[in-house]
Image 1: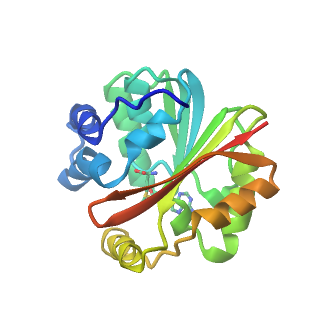
Image 2 (image 1 turned 30 degrees about the vertical axis):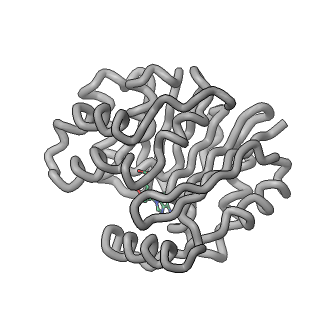
Image 3 (image 1 turned 120 degrees about the vertical axis):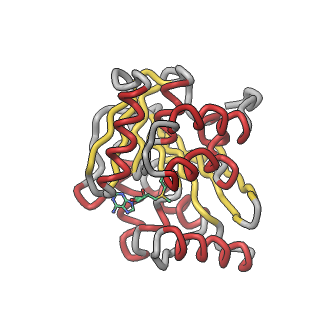
Length: 221
Ligand SMILES: C[S@@+](CC[C@H](N)C(=O)[O-])C[C@H]1O[C@@H](n2cnc3c(N)ncnc32)[C@H](O)[C@@H]1O
């Protein structure tokens, strides 16, 4: 999209605060409220074409879809995640804010397969590094498979270079998810996606605090 991005991390935080205010866990509440300052969600939202249907893979607490729905940006959204409690939070927030007619959340794993529900946009934010290296290529291929012609795949993940930012990214997941994750370079993901008939419409990098991010927007013609 060539339009100017008017959303900012602070604007997203202002939307997230009332959305997640009713969540009992203070930790979950705070993580959603401040997430836009460590993860460039405004850049992801900017790449979602207005009134599209979006599948969010590894949706966590549903922040992206609940934001998109509350902004009136999408006509339909479906998110899934392996973490049952996070899916429960996502659904509760949607229900509390009368967004359930637009977005739905499912407890499901990537290993069960990517549901092909006809969404023209697939988003994958900070999930790829949780997938073991030996399964990453197949995962990317399965994401590309469910994107219809004319649709797009938006992938946001963490950089492998410079090394100090990669180390900061790694420490974040060690502390927050208690997992030693495996980051992958955007160029590798791009090469896998191109094999599945996708073309790159945007590749970008961002820094937030000590974290480094890459964004890939891929389209199927
Ligand atoms: C860093 S969080 C990102 C959550 C969300 N996309 C966001 O940006 O706020 C990574 C998410 O991937 C989910 N995840 C990891 N492995 C998964 C799997 N095998 N199947 C489904 N979800 C998975 C985790 O449960 C977690 O919610």
